Image (cartoon, rainbow, N blue to C red):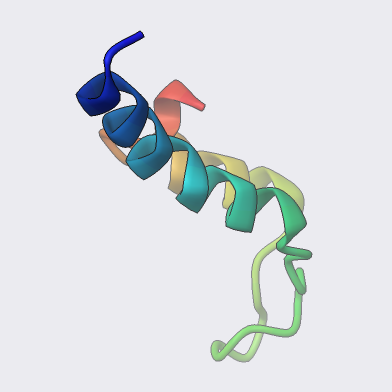
Length: 53
């Protein structure tokens, strides 16, 4: 793997590592009702980047 490949892979994986540690607070967001798991999955499933993950 070339140095540029390693750099690009790191740019992609680092945010995923941060997200892997994220603990969503379902029902405790800024809206009064918050999100349940199904709503959270639907929201991120519609995102053109995150739906791949």
